[in-house]
Length: 347
Image 1 (spheres, rainbow, N blue to C red):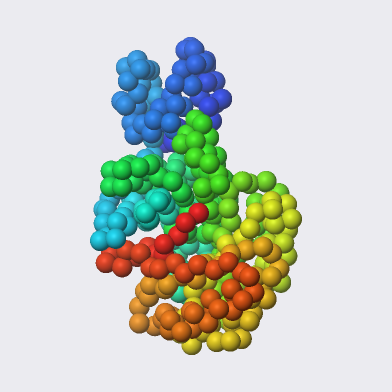
Image 2 (cartoon, rainbow, N blue to C red):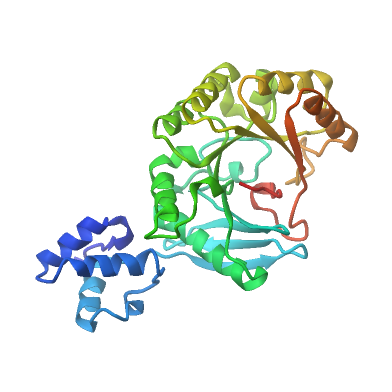
């Protein structure tokens, strides 16, 4: 019977060192392999050129490296790049490179499909098949960093967890991936350049605060009225705005980090004065900024972009209350948009 090999990137450096000692080798060999896996991004054991052929063969017989593969890549006229990323088991997720004049941002996925049921999101129409492993999240970033260098002549500057899936529903793997992204042994990126976006799971937002994370937090809000929010995001009926507010107040008390609210204005859904007033009120609970996002429709259904006039009414109300607001225009309109929602996002 064939024994299933373990993904070597699920093994810690200490465990690798112990593996080599147990195999009659020196512990430092584990350090070498670890560096190849993370800092150098080796795709196979054959890539590890400063390790003997015999040692590479031993690794091959005990482990696998479950690397992603960029299956197809689409480049937009505005410089946006969308990757269809094939995983080792044949499943596919999406990641996106979003350029501006001053930076390039990687939008990465955290799950295959999604655990939640946001009515406006294409990914929500897919059942959640599994969580991504830390290495699979990390690989998306590595691939986009290479594309940033190739197409925009500078390394990746920011990361947003706004692709497929709800990051806080894959908490441990997300955190391990961020640990490697920010580690000197990985990419060495500042956590301040990373933003994790959640649909709003109060218990997990509090856990983020308790874990003293240094990255930024965004919340897909879309309404400050429970009934409307439950229509847009049915799962939120279990997480009323009062609970979300409490978790965000807890977050700010512990981290002193402002919240970013992601907010789409839809025609005949939240393009009215009551919704504007509710958002302004909700924004006063915790220091924040609001990103009004231009919607990229996934079909001809009920979710359609509101008028420019409605968006401007939000802007006037927010600015009148000294709340920072930005409008994020849709990017990559000439390619299929990830999650039906590809906006110009910055961490």
